[in-house]
Amino acid sequence: MSGLNYLRNVRMTVAVLAVISFLAACGGSSNENTPPPPPVTSTPMGTVVLLLTDAPSEDFSEINLEITEAKLIGGAEEQIIFSGNKVVNLLDLQHFTEVIALGEVVADTYTKIRLQVIGIELVHKNTGEKSYPSILANGKIDLLDSSGFTVSENSTLLVVVDVDANKSIHVISSDSGSYKFRPVVKVNVMVEELPDKLSRLDGIVTEIFDVTSGRFLLCDAVESGSCIVVNLLPDGSVFDADGFPVEFDTVEVGDAAVVIGNYRKVEASIDSTDLDVEFDAVVMEVGGNATLIKGIVNTAPDSNGLFQMTPAGGATINVQLQAETKIFGDSGEIGPDAIVVDAEIDVEGVVVEGSGASALDTIRAALVFVDSGFDDELLSGSIAEPIDLVSMSFNVATGTGDFCVETTNGTIITLVSEDGSGIVVTEGEFSDLESGQLVDIYGQPGLGGCFAADEIVVDLTLQP
Image (cartoon, rainbow, N blue to C red; front, side):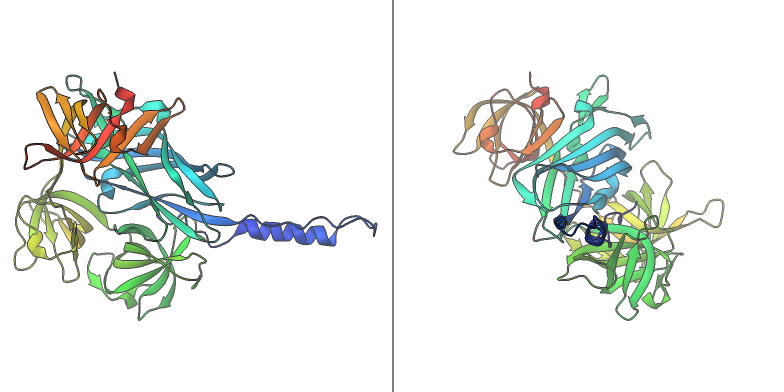
């Protein structure tokens, strides 16, 4: 994946306009009475980074989304921040954010992000079979922010698009087993704060500023001008091309590298980039050999940190924890005691083939994610009376009877509708709920007998 395409360190628009202005001042008619042309002023520009993330899925090992365009709407004119073809496996983004679009845009206030999705592929977890869901409204998805968000001049705005794959894949009929892609998407415009979810970037080490502190420049392998300053954290880990821990002073200019960590705002441009965002890395993998494997733990780690896991649809593999391996859970960094039998984990590292015919392959782990195993339950049906605006509760009629549903101010209400030109996804309120609406409700049975809703998805494209 390419996570650095958004990092531009040359403001070409300003440079070209400056040259035009200079030529206009030096050339032209020899008539002294001819007034000089008006000065050319540059348009204030800012940078938008569009990050994609996702939640896990119980049914699929891959959910591959094909995106061809991303643009901002609502300012003086539309601003395209990505045009091309990018395929993203949403399930690789359970623990990461990935850059899917970037563009330098006119500094303005916008109210809409539009994505163009042309295809989606589902790979079933147990069988490996593939399904291709239908896509509503030709795949045009509008993500609305009614209050608007502002791209400021000479600043970088990070926008996190959270596509919940589990909630977006709608089963049309249990008999036919067909699916529809109904986007359940949330947008978080990071104005002051930055994403707390880890991000993953890959590229080429182009310059090393400080060997002692582990400060260097990482540039995209294809677009060498797309770069970001990376700082290895004091407790950060570096792994070589064979997956073994090493010191940062072994890293050389020209090395391929993957870095995992978090973005950080800086006050001013420094060290070969004019971005006001840098990257703090907790893990650095050198050599381009790292891979990500998801699976179930078969045995607990022994005294040497060795255990077994079985990937979805794959053969059992050894996992070797190392002294510098980083282990994370939902709340941050944790210890190896959290790796227990039947836990779902993601392991990133270098795979080494077994030496004998019956020997297992081994992945030397640089990074391990341990899933909590806590998933919301699903309640589907249509809203029924009574709808109580005071207690923020209502009934839902399902195929097995009626249930009461309780909400709180923290319950997320997502409205999915169609406006003729595409799908529109907005954040709703309890007052938007009406009798007869078809809903998917995610949450847990409450102590009082009612279903406690964490999120309610109102699919207005399915209303009778």
